[in-house]
Image 1: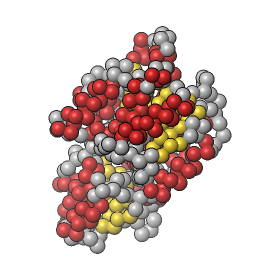
Image 2: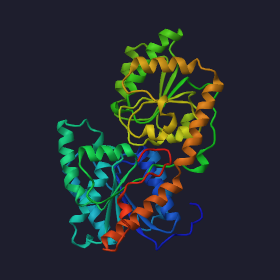
Image 3: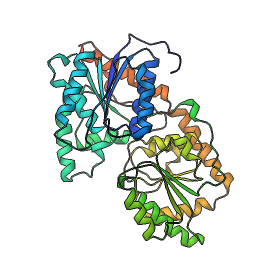
Image 4: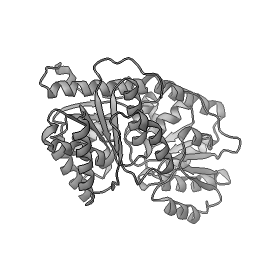
Length: 406
């Protein structure tokens, strides 16, 4: 851990609750926990113990000695399950033992466990904070599963003292699908560290196209494979692609690549740190159908990796003045056109575009700003809960990025 920073108020006790220690949500929680500890706060974590693999085990082992409120790992299921009762009991016991000022739930499942703590008789002074990270808000509006989850969200919103949205998009989605937040809410964009703004060069044997993320339908990887096949006809041969990550749809995607005649041109690598993965490709493609505010886009922008991405979720907020570069999701022809144009583009032009995006992200998406905004929101929610007055203007959602919409 780095040297502690001076605090701007009395230390807080913060308990973070999440399900899967994977992906951007996990990075967000780790960044918050590390930086909150660095600022003198007492922090704890509760997470699933069946997902994440060796990478999650290693990262959690590194931070565990610095968690004054401890770490609890217990099996959790993605969807509602009878074992949820045992998880809730574990969360309740941890809250009873540690008496945190704030219980901060992340994602749909972590948010449910954290907010159900309001049922505890001793929890009246504890702030329940919730960051959706997309989650159930990414289900198709009006679908049966969406209706069930949105009704649950409406019920739990009454027990939510603080809503922290990663993007203006997700805040709008919440208003549309759940309703106006009944209590305090803020928009606080994810951030990356200063050390990540170091340009990365691809390896000599790097593939032309790179994907980094979960192998799930919502990520639109099938659209990318279809577009590679179309682009291959125009280029004379399919460009090589490296898909980095893990997920439930790997076998389906491998079959899809074979059916397209791309088996020899598409490689699948397991999960690895983003900056290590960036060296494996020359052009990152983010073909997602839905997102909140994806870290992979922030990390790639910071590393000046040339990128093609879709116009979904909070990605336009990351691109800011360059959002016209984004593509609609599920557009095979449009993506194939962009692949051909970018792969045949002069390297100097591709590099200049990556530098422009890096400069915009550097100015608006920092870890320090994210953490300070979250801690400030905790303190405001605690003041409200204690009945102390706060400025009326604090009810307005604010963005941590000067370029994104609010």
